[in-house]
Image (cartoon, rainbow, N blue to C red):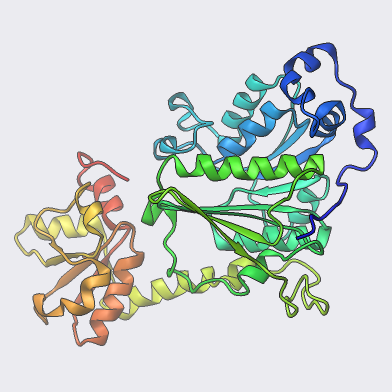
Length: 399
């Protein structure tokens, strides 16, 4: 296979001379013929946008800063939560409650005081993505949701920017470089988003804390190769990693001749509404409709009042066993949502029932399933067990 050749920086590298301290700092690069003085100047002149400073953004930005990339843009509007610390290594315990972008900037400047950090402390959307991405040479996608992935892809294609992609879930990771016309784009690999709720998020399904370190480093490596113009980038190739098996596989990704944005006859010429495209708004409305279609909802305080006066409904917990081991409403019946269709005989019909999960999404789906099977007098616990712990039983841990 021929390796694509391109020059992302043009003549900018010539105007980025290295100072004596920088020569000392990057000495191990300078003695490598693939990098050398010219390559290090290219890194110094380069501008890389990192979307997200979480699991993937942590290692990739740390290594890009250490490698000598001159300008790193950060896109993030979230704050550090204690649950982030298991995998988001750029944030420390002392950063809990602080803006992630502030925490990340401090760590990056501590590694490389000469680094130019550009902060974009707001959500990336169709209204700002083109302006934010335009000044950068490489865009690195460290996001964890489908609307933003399609948004980043389309902005990169329209701007002619390489999109360094990474994805993680449980023990599995993916990485690729989408860069039409040299290769396919994200839409060539995934023409349509999965139905809302079909693919659990990391918050629902979990992720091995070490996994984003490996995939983020792969993304950083690809970004550096693109800047240097060396090696064979992951263009047209999807790298698949299985941490449990400690195995790497590679899948060829071909350009889709009918791709609506990078194909020969594109139908997408501007950014669209990606929440609508991925059905996120529709899913939220469907969830609300599911609850409304039954006898409605019940708040944790209302359920506590029923329990206190001895008028207890059947409490059905549809979370997975791993979640039950963390926290639980005493006396609840546990039937994980995937097992519910096969275990309906364990439930009494006609009795008042409160269904709950972690936050309310899975329980709404359970109610829809139960109503289709003839169950009635069902209510969804508003906010799930997280709301129960917050409002009723704060002695239990949250996750």
